[in-house]
Amino acid sequence: MTEYSPLLSVKGLGVEFRTRRGVARVLDDVGFELHRGQTLGVVGESGCGKSVTALAVMQLISQPPGRITGGEVRFDGRDLLQFSESEMRRVRGNRISMIFQEPMTSLNPAYTVGDQIAEAVRLHEGLSKAASLARAVEMLDAVGIPAAAQRLHEYPHQFSGGMRQRVMIAMALACKPDVLIADEPTTALDVTVQAQIFDLIADMRERTGTAVMLITHDMGAIAEMADRVVVMYAGRIVEAGAVRDILSAPQHPYTRGLIACAPGRRTVAPGQPLEEIPGTVPSLLERDAGCLFANRCAKVMPRCRAELPPVTTQAGGHQVACWLNQETSA
Amino acid sequence: MAVTVPSPTPTVEAMSPWLEAWRVFRSNKAAMLGLVILSVIVLTMSFGPSLYGVAPFDIAGAPFTPPFTEPSVWLGTDYLGRDVLAGVLVGGRATVLVGLAAATVAVTIGVSIGALAGYFGGWVDTALSRVTELFQVLPALLFAMVLVTLFTPSLTVVIFAIGIVAWTGTARLARAEFMRLRHLEYANAARAIGAGPLRLMLREILPNALPPLIVSATLIVGSAILFEAGLSFLGLSDANVMSWGLMIGSNRRNILECWWAVTFPGAAIFLTVLAVSLIGDGLNDAFNPKLHLR
Image 1: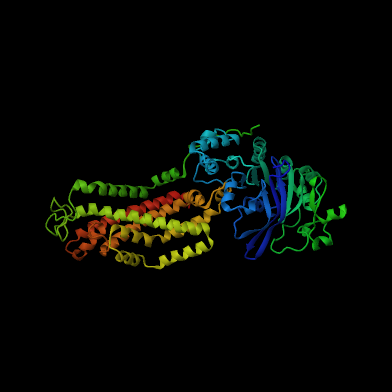
Image 2: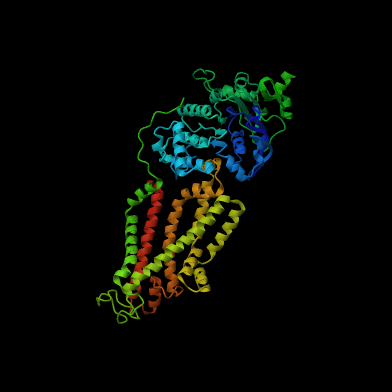
């Protein structure tokens, strides 16, 4: 494969969920690329489709009620959406791994952490029990768990939240995957531990060359970790580009709002409230014709409510879907 | 650079959930009493007959010999002059064996059906739940009797007949547990490392569903023993294999003049079922330590 072709390329991905009250379009025309060794940040509020995007890439959406309505997920030149379930099983954990937001419940309480990491290795590489346990020690050591050889035989309840997330990372990276999808890996953790986990992910990326898709709503983490950023809103990508461009020159009012909301980026005087984006993510059941952000946007124009803004691409691959941008660039 | 966190305080010794449960179980006096009674019963059954050396179907003395009168037949004899003590010692083997084997059959059927229904959901669940309900509404003892009479009564037939009428509760329990556990994060995490449905069911979900299933299996052992006794009492068991139920059944007409021939096997059944129930209760408490915090 050529150097320029991305490792993971998603195009026009759509996902719906059938609910009692109708069909919700959870993802609509989502597309992005992830290159080897890169970190792609995916940001947005809760319920905007970040996790569903990750699950769709892994083909872990329960169907029904979910359904992938179209698009392609090209990984290493092949479309994962065309894979059979058993082909997908060989990809999961082996070439694409995922860590979840709840380290407290993501480990099976019935097995020692060593068994669980070794299990992932045995599943894909067919190693012996001893060899896979040796790899588990190696991985626990690599993710910074002290006395790894002893802690191998401990149960998840003997680990703290941050340590469990380290174990999850060890498990996800045990088979040296090409892509690591981290779905809000620090949401459930203490602030001090959050930084450690981000450092660890960055460190592991350096050492293994794994590409990372980092789903988060922590703009600070994005600034530190990501090479490129995708901003999602209500199941659509509203802005995408290099991390510098997005953070220093955000074009979409939603992205600006997100950055303004992040505490610590701009010092807020004591007693002053943090900024917020008014309103909430709209229901995905009944969507209007226009821009989905129109009802919360400070700069809304009549056109925004009538038509969905097209994506425009600027220098450096900075993409924005906003009428405002259309007006200025036209 | 490798990022390490400062090493934490030395942890308490690694304790598996099973060891933890055993610790709670051990401190439960009633449950330990049950365990002791059951151990004594099992040991007596295993070694008693060969030590005692009297065959249960042999004529050992005059019919209707009351207990504690003749040293050679301590617990007396029945209407045919058979030694009641020999019967009690040997009869436990068939009764407990049938109880255990029938419970195994019931739990195997129940867990398989419940696991498939709970894991896959949808039409699989609907179909299997209807089948479970169908078996549930049939009167159990009558159904078991029909099954036994359809074939030549033998221990195997009795075991399967009891197994087939006793699995429904376990199936419903397993279904509920699998439904709850299949959506937990660690099941998803296992899917994300490439585990298939069989692996998920057997390795990820089943071990976590085991505690309530073990409790229910224990209680099934108790009820299977009672079932076996009931079938033997009605003469629907292997007449060539001595069992407690058979003893009670064959002596029931002489209950007034020969109370001992039914009382001792009856007491044996009572003690065994009591011990099994105490153990089941203890296991239930051991697996749900939160119940104690009320």
